[in-house]
Length: 114
Length: 111
Image (cartoon, rainbow over all chains, first blue to last red; front, side, top):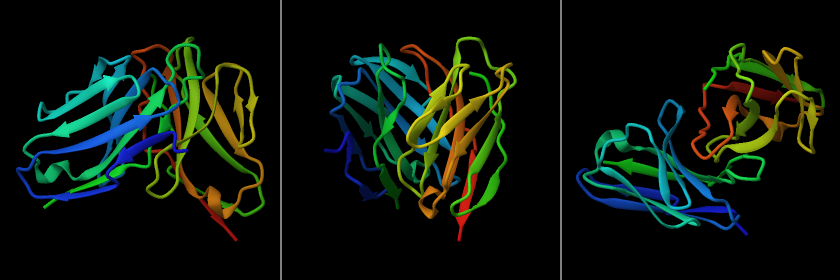
């Protein structure tokens, strides 16, 4: 059983398109995150949600809109895709209360904008 | 969050212990030391964490100095599969906490 699963694993799309990446965790964690890893391999946090509430928004362009329908899901919708959005996007989850606070990451979604 | 300093790269022979250092001289009293690794392009993997006591689990040991300004991650018997980028991160707990990744140490395990 995959703890944090992301779909799709690969996504190739043209500039200007709108796309979504889905993330689900079956760990019962109350907090979920989106990270972006660019071509230089630098991992940066984008958003975090705790029990469906936005907690962290790290100066991400408003073309990126996270949505958390429930605490087990955090989806990322991207409007008007640009070349610079090409990266690997990782979803993660953690238990903010009562847990060891270690994050569990998904296997990533490689987004290529052409 | 406090920042950490790690060497950019290290080599280790297979079967030997890999000792990865980390400096975190500005760590606050409520911040934990976490270690993660990223193998190739996979998602980062949690290894271990500690506050002030030394910790050991099935993957590694974490040695934290008494002043908490530095720590060492020890992989007791490195294998080729341990080749990865290792990140040392200090982080406080709470719903607004976030892992801030630096550049890490690229560990190359060789035959």
